[in-house]
Each structure stands twice: as C-alpha cells, then as structure tokens.
Length: 284
Image (cartoon, rainbow, N blue to C red; front, top):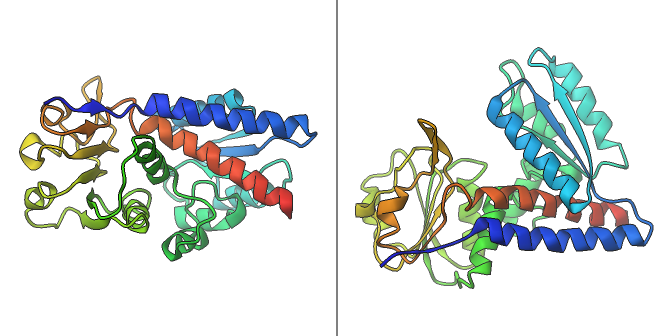
C-alpha cells in the first residue's frame, strides 16, 4: 500500500481563508485588525526566512504587522525595553520573539516578559500551565497545527495509541498533552527510551519531532498507522523530515510530507492565536 498524503498546504489555505474573512468583517465594523509584532535578534538565516514568511502571511490575511530586526549585539536591557513597550501598545495583540536568541540573551527571561495575553507562541509559563490544566488561552503553534491536520482528516483520537518521539517544551510535551486531552493514550519516547521500535510498531499515530533526519524507518512502523513528521533537516541541498518518507510511505495509511506538511500549519496557527488574542483584548 502507499500512504495518502496529509496536505498541510491545503489545510493551511482553508484555515487562512477563514481568518481572512473574520478580519474583513472586523474591519468592516470599524475595528482595527489584529496586530502582530515579530522580533528577530541576530542574523540566523533560518530565522530570517521564518520571519519573512510570517510577515507575508500577516499581509495575506489582513493583519497589521510590525517587524523589529535587531543586531546580535543587542543588550538584554534593550530587548527587555522593547518587549515592555509592545506589551502596552494597543495596536499589537500578539508578540513573537523568534528563537533561538544569540548567546548572552536569556531566552527564558525574555519569553517570561511577554504579557501572557499577547504570548501567541504559547511559551509563557502561565499559558503552558493553563494548557496542562485543560483551560488554554492559546495553543502552541506546531502541536495546534498537527491537531488541526488530524481534525481535517476526520481522525477520531479517542482511545487511539499515540506515540510522540521527542520531549521538547515547544513540540513534544505540549503535543502529548493535547493528544491526551482528546482521550488518546500517549507514550513519549526520547533519546534514552529503550527499544523505540517495539513501541512505535504498536501505535496508531506517531508524531516524530526529534530533529534527526530519517530517524523513523520502515522497520519501525506498521500498516494502517498515521505518521506526522515535524522534522526539518537539511541533507545536502535537500530538506527532509525525521521520517524516512519514501520507505515509510509504502507501509502506513497516512503521512505528512516535508516540506508541505506540518510546516505551513505552524504559521497558520500563529495567525489563529493572534486573531484570538485580538478578540480577547477587544472585550477588556
């Protein structure tokens, strides 16, 4: 069998069209559009691409966007003052601090400075705590994008055995929690897990977010499984995921490609969170 492809670009387009329509109605009522501020410190090439994509996406759905490109030599106090200013700016409903930060800037300190109601990346401890308590304001963008893909595929998670490979605070841990809240039975695997193939072969859904090219191979999967590949790795000039796509796709039922799978959904859910932030701040 050959797996059917879960098309992140198509789902992203559908969700962004819905966002565009909501923003249009908002503006027609005389309300300002959602505003997103993106802060990039340093000249990381991958981060520069992400920021450009986010800016283009904002323009496409009708958001107001501000971009702050700061040199790698930026002092902690300067970045701190910028975040505090944006926290009180009524035009800005969401603040995104592009990671990683250059050496010398403490990510934890800077992320905790962002007002929880403007933390559209869902990195603030208050928002992460609310997620784990089952009462989130925002959902972390990549796991939220994956949940949206599963929803569009009409996949009922209740009772399913889900394996998450990777335990990062950005993807692995919140992904496991979101699957659990949809009544899946969740196992988290990581670098010290023994006999990962024995665990993955028995899963219904596998989410791979380990940052290692072609980590999940055909001998680790079974027929009928759903494979979600979060990885983005450069092998020569080629972008590949954490899944050995060509081999695995011959065995499983559904799979996300790289590129064109989870990636487009991450930016889309950032837009969704910013729209939600605008609605919440509008009421206060």
